[in-house]
Image (cartoon, rainbow, N blue to C red):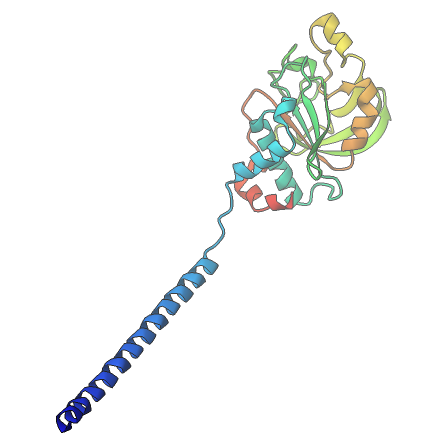
Length: 261
């Protein structure tokens, strides 16, 4: 019996030691796991959210408005909305009207190549015909000028301004924003106005629309509606078949402001 007591006296401290070591080791493991989980959690929290590429965001807007179905090409819309965003960020546009007008003179005059887009409500308000200047070409415009008496259309970005009553009835003045490209629009009296030669009847008779002296002329019966929609400092972009460069096509600058659309 004494022999067993001596053995237990020896074993008991050893068992206590081993149990204590096990508990301490288990505690350290748990602490390390908790620290790693905490570190991983912090890393996840601190990781910045990546923004989608600029073109992807533009594509989302393009698809939301169903612009492809209306015939407006994505590349033209991308240029137009890039300029719109940059002009908006410079406070050049009416904050109460998120209206973008796009005219694509790379298309035939027999196509509806003018779009009035409500960016706020993601909808096309109007898609209709528009004439180019007689000096720019017959059915398709291929020459553009900023010079008076050229009777040619001008490409680029415009801001719509005030209305007036002229020889074509209600008309809307335009201010060209691209130096050397369209900045003489006001002095050239380049305005939006109605014209009888902008009609399907004219197309059926002549195979194309009639032509203006450089103005983006629109159908007579839609003139007042169009002017009402786009007047008072909204953005107009005129695209053409030729290469066009503008400070307003700065995508990097526009990317920082696109979420305001």
